[in-house]
Image (cartoon, rainbow, N blue to C red; front, side, top):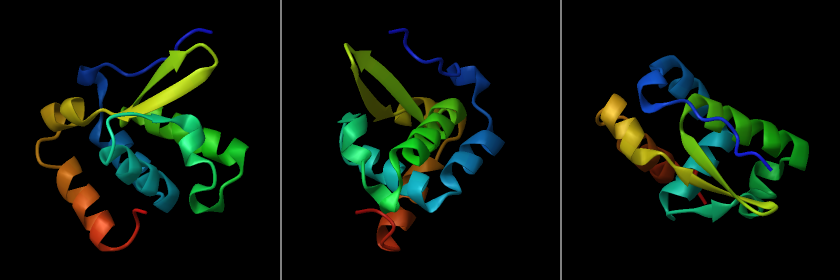
Length: 108
C-alpha cells in the first residue's frame, strides 16, 4: 500500500487549514490527535456519529489541508497532528484553536 500524499510544509495554506478546522467532527479529531502523539484511524470510529465513509472523507480533508500526517503500517493507518509544521507556517494558530475547542466541549 502506497502512503497517501501530504502537502509539504511550504504548501500549507491558511484557507485550507481553516477549512479543515471548520467542521465540528474534524475539529474533534484534531483535538483527539492533540492529546496523543499518534492514533490509529480506527480510534475515530464513532466520532460525532459518523459513518465509516464519512469519517474517511473527513480524515482525507484533514490530511490534504496539512493538519494531519498519515503513516501506513501494513494494513493499518495511523494519524498524527502536524503541530510543528502548523506552528512554523502559522505561529500561534493551532494551540488556541485546540484550547478553545476543548473549553467549549467540542473535544472528548
